[in-house]
Length: 199
Image (cartoon, rainbow, N blue to C red; front, top):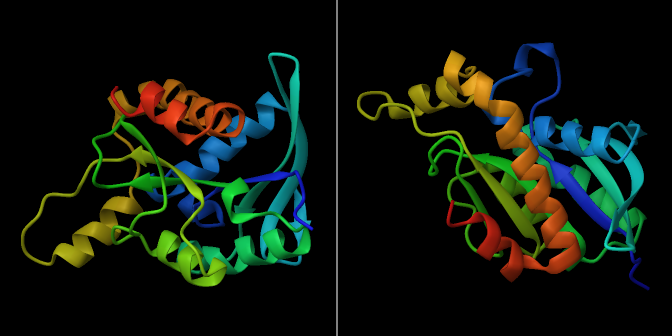
């Protein structure tokens, strides 16, 4: 039987060398949610840091798990599949927060389903869950300059840090991403899209 828990997963790469990089936007956003709802993380089978919490909004309570996969970005699906199977969480109760190069820095797009759009973490989750029917909060990080050796530039870009101006905007941006995840949980994807996609 499906649990009434939600699973919110922020994607990133574990380890200090990846802290603060564009590819770790999901981790950073998960940390905002953890602070907001007093969630502490513990190890889940070596696959993820996992915490449990309760959100309150308009006298409604929602129980949720918050995950930061430890499997590195390209194998994020292993962690999510393990958690959702272990706790009987339905795909439509999963929200994934991740960086997106197709959006300018500061833009947020909420969606459910659809293609992975070249994001290896999302591709891994689609494969491991056998479904893309979960919700996503896409956080824009902008794109590297295109041209020669595009792949190398892309890798360097997502594993690079933010400019000074972006760093000063980052706390507000991450708070908006956390708000978007909460809106999906409490009000559904269409409402969250209306609220965040047009910004």
